[in-house]
Picture (cartoon, rainbow over the protein chains, first blue to last red):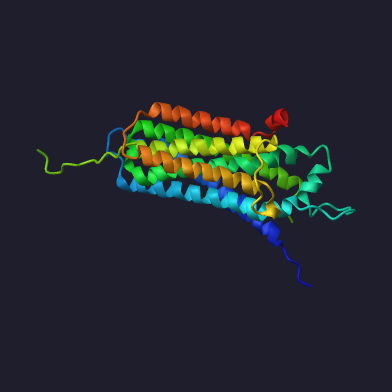
Length: 179
Length: 110
C-alpha cells in the first residue's frame, strides 16, 4: 500500500512558511544589509551593476512576500480554520479547533494567528514601496541619503514584521500542524 | 577639461516619497480596518468564504494602498520635496497600523 509522506496541505504549508515566508525573510534581511552597506557618498558613485542587483533583490523580496501572504490567506488558512463535524473526538485535522479547545493554547489563535492574518500584508506593501523606488531610482537610492534612510527604516519594519509573524507561525505549526 | 565627463541625471524625489507614504497609508489602513471590523464598526464582506472575513479586510486595505499610491504619485511625481516629514509620516502610520492590528487592543473596543 502506498503511503504519502506529505499531504497536499502539508506541502502547501511548507511552500507558504519555508519557501515563500522563509525566502522573503532572507531576502529582506539581505536587502536591508545591502542598502546600509552599499551607501554611496556622491551622486552617481554607486556602480550601475550594484544598484541593479539591489533593485532585483528588492523586487524578489516583494514578490516572495506577496506570494507568501496570498498562499497563506487563500490556500493554507482555509484548512486551518475548517469547522470540525459535530461530536468528533480527534481534532488533529482541524488546527483552529484543536488550538482553541485547550485554554493553554487558545492564545495561539486569538493572538498569534489573528496577528498573522493582517501584519504580513503590511510587510508586503512596505517592501513593494522600497522595491519600486530601487527599480526607478537605481543608484540615486544609494547616493541620496534622505531616500536611503527612509528605505532603511521601511525595510527594518518589514524585517521585524516578517520575523515576528514567522516566529508565531512556527509556534502554531508546532502545536497544531496542517497534516 | 576631462574627456571622461560623467553626467548624473537626478530624478525628483516626489515619486519615491509617494511610494513610501502610500505604503505607510496601506499599513495604517490594514490595521484600522482590522480594528474597526473587530469592534463591529466596519462590516467588510467576505470575498472567499473558506478563508473567511480576512479576505475582505485585506483586499480593502490593498485597494486603499493602491488608490493612495496612485493619487500621491500623480501629484508628487515631478516635484522635489522635503523628505523629513514624509519619513516621519510613513513610520508613524506604519507603527499605528501595527498597533491597530494587535489583537489584544481589539478587546478594548469589542
